[in-house]
Length: 370
Image (tube, rainbow, N blue to C red):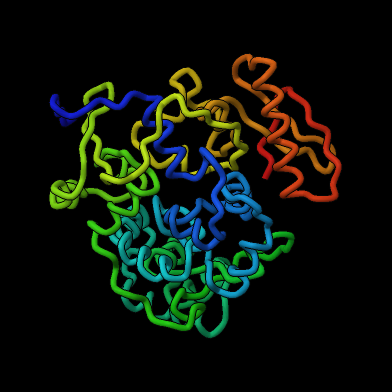
């Protein structure tokens, strides 16, 4: 842990308000869906619906078709990038950020080396590219085709190797609001009709990360990106950045002109999807997750949809099919807070499920609504 005694201290609440502002959660933004996806450097998208709920919480006047249309038009795509998880990215970011995080995908393959014994990974990448560019393939189809070529290898490991070595996007209708479709894959270059571009420099990505998630430490960004050895990039940028420290003494970096609102700025309630990047993109998550609620938004390896009250994790929620929005709070809410949460729930339902009547009730959430 690096300590900088001369740097100003930012308390937890100050970090909370700064991050909420960067995340478009302190007040709703007039940005378009594509502009927001670019500013946020992608949206966590392990499931189909979370990116839509994420934007509904952040954008003024959002409607699901505002993301579905650019996705159908191949201006936005679903691809594995940060932390080896699926993200919704703009086409430009899909073609650049994936090369940036390729070292992490290469490291991921080491866990499958036993099942890949004797496999020429360069040849596998060439063959897998030919397969998916001839027509989108499911992972099962990839496993079958690659196993025919390497019958002594583990089929699942072969398919994972293809996913790690190639920038594979999920083709539509998968990912479109109100549509269904199995996961079928092709390369980003083939789907978008243009070649991959050079990866951005780590320095440029540091600046984008701070704009969306700062102030932040080196470890915070490494957690977000799933990369290591980013200290050198921060050091190169140090003359262009300002520095702070948190209450534990950890050095934080930030853009000089980035917003750092008054810690007492009101933060309205927000309904966030499961796996929202707000809760996953810092090594120290106490700016959003009170220590006493750590782990409460998860069940096993599945995440609940989360509720923010006064800017911090305060509960979880789910939709019971066409009947009710159920809200489970971790602590007692004041009457005013409860009314604000109910009003925000009504707004979210009107945006995401117009024409459907839901009751809103406070009570235990039994399972994650997906």
